Image 1 (cartoon, one colour):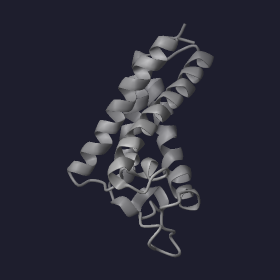
Image 2 (image 1 turned 120 degrees about the vertical axis):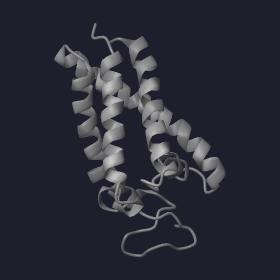
Image 3 (image 1 turned 90 degrees about the vertical axis):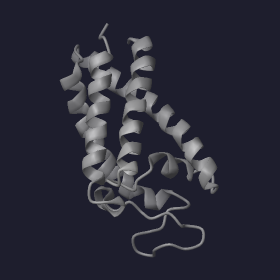
Length: 158
């Protein structure tokens, strides 16, 4: 395992992914904020939630970098295309499995069936996060493909 590359390229890839997702919000392509979703898992203060959520997202980026590195090591190769392929799969799992599952786990996320209430004020993502905008699935997939490409391009198999 190439630990320096896991830490370095995991950080770089996560920052690129976060930048792409934030930029998509800024230009109106998506209303999804991963830092807000993650941060509100632990606090109801929205200002604090975004900062805490960003740190959680950064930590998760390193965890996923480790998983990607384990795959690269087991295959004996890495590269932008290999990483992009893994990123595509990662993005699909996030959209199809993880985000819809959040409404059952997140203490502040409204349900698709019951809607918002005082303690559950965040809108649920819905299937493929379409509740956050028509372009959200595309932006999320592109960001994860780029994450994988950056990580795969930088990671050296040892």
